[in-house]
Length: 61
Image (cartoon, rainbow, N blue to C red; front, side):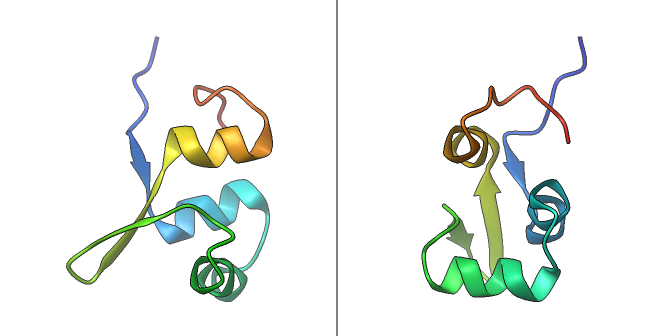
């Protein structure tokens, strides 16, 4: 079994959600996508994103 990272970048999350990078940043600003900020980086917890979608966190889109 391949271990998945605990967090995703904005680009990775956008790809999973099938939205543009700009739309992903807009959704983050509106707190529609769960995220954490570490310094200048924005990271999306994989488990929270997939829970939002109603899917197990091990799924890969």
